[in-house]
Amino acid sequence: MVADVDGEARAPEGADVRFELVESERVALRVLCIDDDTRLFELLASYLGDNGVRLEHAPDGRQGLATLDRGVFDAVLLDVMMPGIDGLEVCRRIREKSRIPVIMLTARGDETDRVVGLELGADDYVPKPFSPRELLARIRAVLRRTAPAGEPPLIVGGVSVDLQAREVRVGGNVVELTALEFDLLVALARRPGRVVPREVLLEEAGRGDVTVSDRTVDVHVSHLRRKLGDDSRAPRLIKTVRGVGYVLARELPA
Image 1 (cartoon, helix red, strand yellow):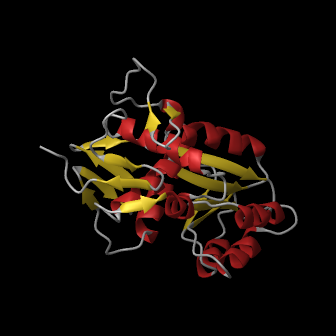
Image 2 (cartoon, one colour):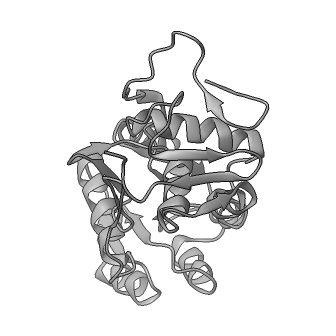
Image 3 (cartoon, helix red, strand yellow):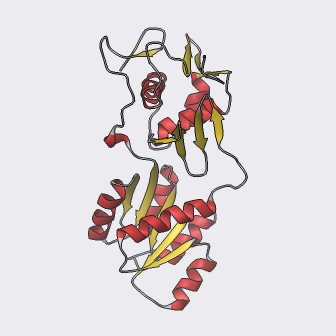
């Protein structure tokens, strides 16, 4: 995909712009693992990565807190027993300034540790050893429980955007988007039929781990169109307002 001088993303001549699922872009969630067990992290990163969760690593509590301050994450996996600052203290410090979901991991089955962790604000507690499949289920369950309640899906132009599940459907079929693409779509879907300037999209879709520029927005809107089945050469769903931004059609033309 390329962008023309007016900022409209277009496919090269003869390119196939039909719906296509790009496996390498299937990253919906970003989770920080604070654990000194590198082998465990590598195992989890491989499995969770194949299931739409990008796992990042911090080997101790101090680095974990610093990483949280610098980035944007959807959840934290936190080991209890670590050198330096232990997991219980890290959890306490996280809760001083954030409500991000925290899942405690521990090789100790002591009930006191579990109770203290939950009282400090942890959302779940998973004893080691555990299977990656179980952990994935726990992550999804915690995110469902901690998602803001009461906000219904956004339905615009035949596209359904479930804010709590971070899930997009077109014609009843799930469409896999990157985190940035999802945020761009939400920013447009909240204002159907209205032009959303690029600077607004930059502000609302920018994430701490992604450098977003005007051209980045154009490229990601191009990807978003393709995944939603929109024709980048003659878009009917996400239209370009030259020199300003983009507008999401309230309804598709007949």
